[in-house]
Length: 133
Image (cartoon, rainbow, N blue to C red; front, side, top):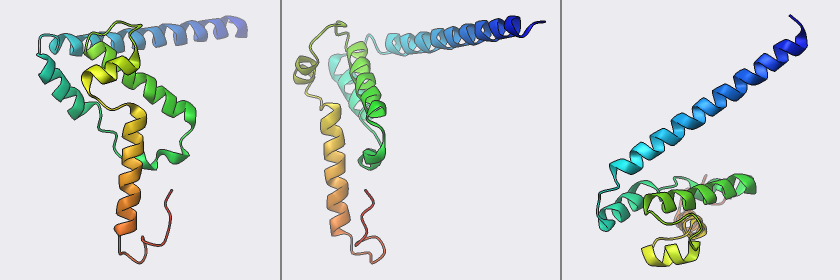
């Protein structure tokens, strides 16, 4: 076989694999959404606050590329819209005001502030004078 034919087959395989993975991910997301679609608004709000707002160690994300953080922000908003049945083009700020949920920037700011406050209160000789971020 020629190398061109092998390259074409590899590219076709990569395309088929990626589309299959995307289909599986979308199906799993829709299954989860259907599972909670009949819950009341308060139950959905409690579930979202419990499972979707918990970003562990987000205060240490200062050295992460902004493109990665922007992807997290857009995923956060997309999950919010899908979970609470907002329209695709709904106003994001209006959604946050209606739901009473914090924005991604607020979550990261509060986590960073509380981390720095805990660091200042720490009396450990090794940890206290050094700056981690």
